[in-house]
Length: 390
Image (cartoon, rainbow, N blue to C red):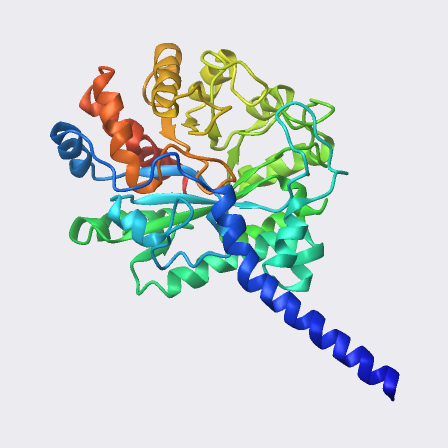
């Protein structure tokens, strides 16, 4: 009996410690990993602000906010994106991308899936369900469910876009209500399929409409740009691409090895893009797209989402972002360029979502025409989604 009481007391102490950890640690991690170099409010010229306010559709292709224990229905003091800040920024559509595994010590050159997984630890300290601790598929499904729940709690002003009808509804609502915003779900790395093609359909049913075959390490589908093999698609990878085409899912090439990009572009008859990337023409590293792949993605009708973080673009970041856009424009035209921030992706950003007018100002200063700026800031994404959503 005495041993039982001691054990019960020990469990009670552990429970209290764990609850304290869940309440205290996640906000600290969020604040540490998702910084901005300059905090709001942001100021720009009257010309830039007038043009920005006239934009009818602003969109970004990559944000990892669902990874963090942050209520997106309220304005937060940490991180880069939430629903109120999207409204403040006049953003119409944000891609919310799901991260399920991240190897410790990850880098642009060489990582393995055998390394300690940072997301397992993050899931534990965030108090997420035990099933979420051990299953990559459950992590993906959980984050998808989170976006739906927060959309339901946002009093009808947030639409989870899963179809062309949803997207057209968002466009229609914004004509009379600029507070209407939307998001669609993507995933970084098909390792969350856990080698089962059936899980792709389950995630599609959960609302996922975009999937990157790899993230920072090789998996069952083939080689990551940051993995060991640098290989192309495996047999399973080809099957996943075929099924994605059948479902009409968007293929995200952002972390794929060059050989995998070649294989996907050769096979896929469906929509492709690179959601958050730099370009080797301005910063040459394994993370960024070659000129050849930029041209091929553009020829496929795809998009190049230019990221904002150091490593994707040169510093200082705002000028580096536009450097990359200028390069893409010069070799592939304006119609493939999009915003691909990587907001809330454990990276320091030059601004949060409310700082997007700073980007418009830099584009104006560099001689981009107003119609080109409208295309970059969201017009290209709008056209792409209308063409490819079902």
